[in-house]
Length: 243
Image (cartoon, rainbow, N blue to C red; front, side, top):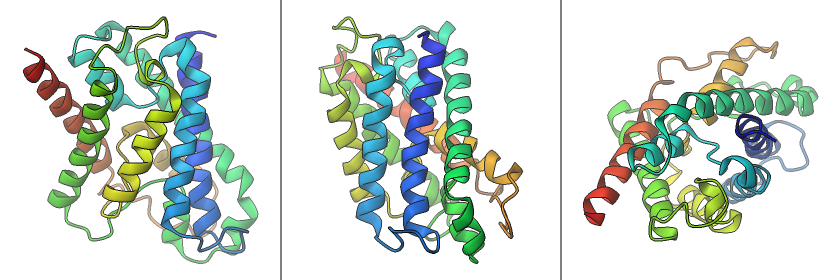
C-alpha cells in the first residue's frame, strides 16, 4: 500500500466511524438515538484508533492536514509530500462521508431537523461567535499537535514507522482525541481537522439528502483556518522550546 492510498483509507475509516457515531446519536430512529456526547467522543476516538492502525505502517497515519502541516513546519516531514497527503486526506474524508450516508439513508429520511442531518457531516458552533469559535479550534488543535510532539519527546521518526501519528501508537493518539472531545469539544464540535470538516461538508452539499437545509458555508472557513493556525502555533512553540 502506498502512502497516498494509506492516507485515503485511514481517513476514510476515521470519518466512517466518526461521522457514523454522530449519525447513530442524532438521527431519528437509530438504536443509539440521543445516547449523548460521551458516545460521540468515544466513537471519534475509536475512529482515530482504527485509522491509525490501518495507515500507520505505510504513511505514518497523519489523517489530518493540520498534522501534516505541523510536522512539516517542525522539519519532521517533507514539504514536497504535503500536497499529496492533504489531497489523500480529503478524498478519504469524502468517501467516508458517502459511506455514512449510504449506511443511514433511511434515517436521513426519517429525520425532520435539517441541523441534525448537517451535524452528521460537519461541525457547527454551539454559540455562533466566529472569533471565539476560531479560538476554540485553534486551542483544540494546538493541544492535539503539541501533545503529539511530546508523546515521544518530538522524536517522531525514531521507529521504522513513517513519521506521523502511527509513530506514537494508535492508542495514545485515540486517548488524546477522546480527551480533547470531552474537555474542549463543547463549543464547536472540535473539528481539529480541516479534511474532517470540509470534505464531508462538500458531500452534504452534493448528496441527495431530503430537506437537508444549508451546508453552513458562511462558517466553513473556521474549522479549516483554526486547525491550521493551531498546528502552526504548536509546531512553532515546540521548535522554540527545543532550541
